[in-house]
Length: 212
Length: 296
Image (cartoon, rainbow over all chains, first blue to last red; front, side, top):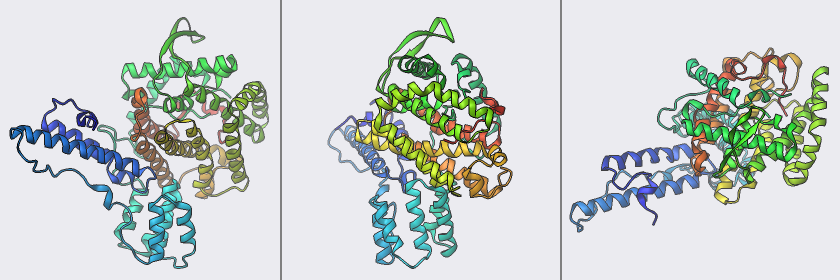
């Protein structure tokens, strides 16, 4: 197995607190919420597994060291399991269930065909339609579908959270200290960046950029 | 091409900035070597970012050029990724010029025509070097042109045509995981570029009547965004940036990690915000009066 400390990107001399901190930061980064309805979710899940294993291994090693090599590991209990529960839980009618399964397997064309053959246009239908759009990266259409789903089934938490996610109003992972958004980018901050570019353009021959 | 994709320089250390500058210079030198000195003019930040995404570690060597004729500046040595970025630059710029000849006003049309003529030998060479990429780009631009002719009143469909165009470049990656990550990242990069460009041109297109998906999608008359339009456009832009960031975290881009991180977690948001507020051109050397039509 690869060095667990390397996976958590810390030296083996790190304190218990530092180990926990590094683990939490990585777990936040690869959390299922950040890869919801994302075709790369399986890669993130693998990363998460790697991090969990590395953390558990370190915990075990340290517990064993503390109890003189014989102590059984009691389990730190803080590893996220996450991914198994993400995505499409509620079954509903079997036709909708098949669509959910197809989306889950990233077979979007199949999901689309199955959905087109369902004549019931209820909240679930629009939710699934929106999920397909969202996976394809068609965010604008996805939002419209999720909105309709929420109107047809007000109070459905799954549809509401899908809408919130698509509208980017949910909390997504950012490295510490990064908090600029397109809508609320502070003027002074952006001004600072623009200025930096004025200088940069001078040394990078930026005059060429405005060509044509 | 566009020049919207920039890292937030404030987030980079001096060394990281030097590397980024060297990548820019390296791409510039390579364009000169491969396609003749005039082709160095087409370089911009977007293609530099593309080179950073595709490139592994590069070594630098001091080279002299017009902007630093005596002392010279460190420039990245050519590698496969830089060559891909250079070839893409030539192909995309050439097709963009052709498109502009089609729908610009008279004096500008003449300018684009002569620029396209000047670029033609380089284009022929690039198309011969990368016939598949050339076919792919042409096909996607045809799809996009068709949607423009139909005056498609959606954001996602035309953005998808351009997104798929950039996505095709991911095929150059060797490793299957890297290819998947790049494919997703480049799709959303293309989508973001297309939408931010439409947002940037909204006022101008409202005047000239040129196709602009944002104007049609929200039935805007003079290019002023309604509250709803603003919310929806921002959701689309931010959503794509988040997808780029999520993809970025799944592959180790080595020495280019800081540059990409400073782009997908801040630079793009700042450029988007400046475009939204109409202050983007003040921060770049591009003149706001140049009346540039950038939709390919």
